[in-house]
Image (cartoon, rainbow, N blue to C red; front, side):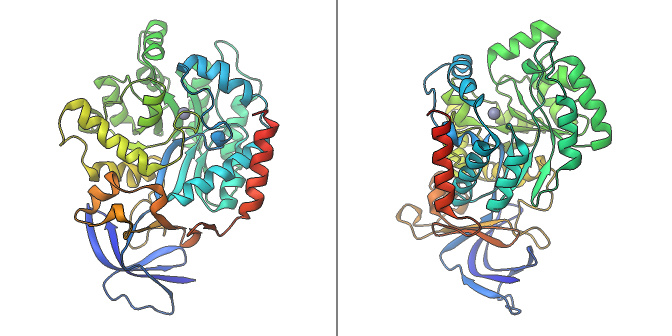
Length: 421
Ligand SMILES: [Zn+2]
């Protein structure tokens, strides 16, 4: 199966923009350039279209589409305990699958091709995400309450990595956070990982309180504490990192811990602002995530790019902070790197054809004087016309090509009703 995207504006590695053709063969990018021979490929006219790498959502709880906007306005701890946890306790694998499919539709329609997801019933989630056509890194969430680990949880985390065989889905390890784990669990997980060698997905230093309580408990920041327990020996992607210190950033750079930045969620929950430019200066890989739909309240990475760009400029009172290209790389290649997916996130020969195509003729996208600036400051998820994963069109002009959208909506509405919402 071959496809030729003809005459598009291409977002290329090295912060370059090109004009030309992109040939896809067997799910990979086979050629990029001007007047690429069609070689029997079906052509797609991309005149006045932008062809860019599919976006990588580096931190999400996709099935929280089911609780979109729930508990809005509450402070984080009350939001979790009063609004979110009681509903999550009722969720079944069927609910998770329906919420995941619905979230995958929202993401694919907005140009996202891969998500790092942390939620319950990951097998059901993985199957739903894959069936929709997306890529994802999923995990069994590692949890421990003080001295109490849910029975069998460590084995479940390890077994999920060992046994998962779902197309386009990779299994990683996970702890929820420093405050929902304990030393024994972390040491055991790190020991098991000497064989598995997977990165760990986690939340870190989201709130000032959580960061300060860890310092009081262990005399170390969450990053330093978890690093010392061996949790980052094979890398990690850490959501939030709002209260991380310079020393934390140095540890993250040294251990290959990506900062998964979630600016909308951090602002909505009043947590603060991650010091992204400083983290980058100290060599940390920074990626972008939406977090869950109850703290965002959408899965729109174009909006996330815009917010990420604006807040650093406003905070520093310096328009040179965090360039448009910095932000685009956060939402693409940096996320791919965090998830151990070196074969995606860029338009280059040999990489997976994970792409999105944007209509550049919308009124708010004309004129296209500076492509990077346009992507970050003017583009919306709804401007995406087509999304491809492994060269397969999974979304085109309102249609989801691997899904029955009517059935997905029915299942989703049933799940919302089942949760009593
Ligand atoms: Zn989260």
